[in-house]
Length: 240
Ligand code: UDP
Image 1 (tube, rainbow, N blue to C red):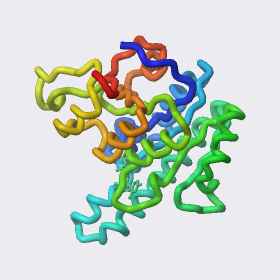
Image 2: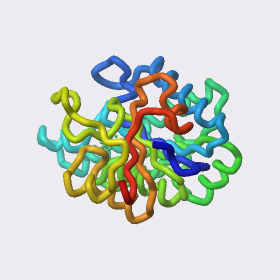
Image 3: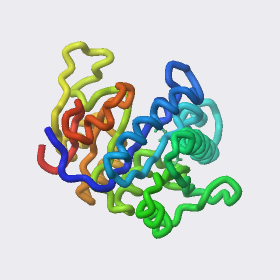
Image 4: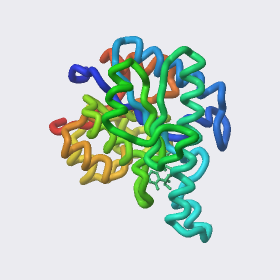
């Protein structure tokens, strides 16, 4: 199934994909691989925004399970996303792609604060804008941060690059007969509690009619294929 015409996209990468084959943290070689994907997609003429999670470094909820205050853990998680954003910025700029990082938590000596109109200007100038620190608020996720920024920036689609090549009716890692959806509605994702993005993010996309495209970023060249309409993916939209 092909995508609607797209000029501006927001690509959401979970922190885990930055680990490559490691169990934790950032594998710079793998981040370079991801940056090459972003560069190739951008060179097709798209305006690109990026949101990267922090799960490869820290998740507030895991900290809370071990006795850390949840809000403190969440702020630590948001700081982890800034580290990932800087790693991606570094990889992209080494490939000659101009970027700016904007953080929802201001940190003046590290990156710009999030200012929508400024981000707009960067995109017009052909820069990739990496939005860091999620929404800037605890109890949210970077999926919701991605949906929020996609809505604010008027993106035509939210691309979610993960380790799985779409949305399945059950977990394909545990069930060999799991079936992948070509397309599925926001309502079904929410009603069946399918693991696409968290419910807040899906609801925000539904309200703003932003299609969510779930695909595997681990397969080389897949981002460009998905954008060209010949990749393997699931599209979440109003009517499946
Ligand atoms: N986080 C938060 N508010 C946000 C975005 C993220 O508190 O708006 C925290 C939260 O603790 C989360 C962590 O940052 O667990 C890392 O983000 P996320 O789990 O979304 O990363 P991903 O799973 O995409 O790697």
